[in-house]
Length: 123
Image (cartoon, rainbow, N blue to C red; front, side):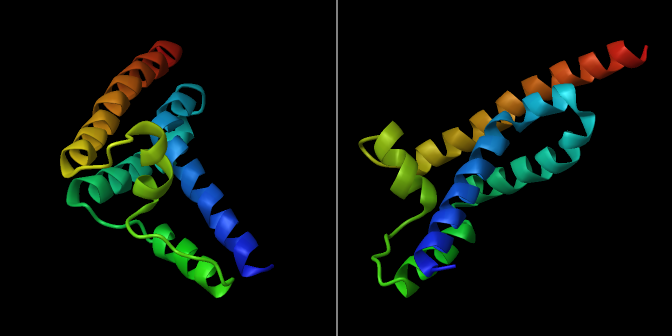
């Protein structure tokens, strides 16, 4: 598989991971076992945002693009692909912390609903 196609695949996996972090708790309402995958993903995403770490998928994508003869970008996946869509002024540390806190709050609410749902079904 050419490097460019692999870089695109990493990009899609990265985007799907973000969607899973944001919405995966809703899957746990239907399938309880999803929580065992989703909660570690949420913890990882919150750590990345909270500490300002770079997700390992970003340098992987960039190295594949470079190997394909393409150009790379500075910063992370969110800054490069999502910020231009959502935050035209750019991603600040404050926004990163806000995003991390939002992920935590949304997932607490979703898992509270899931917990209630699971206990109603088993009780």
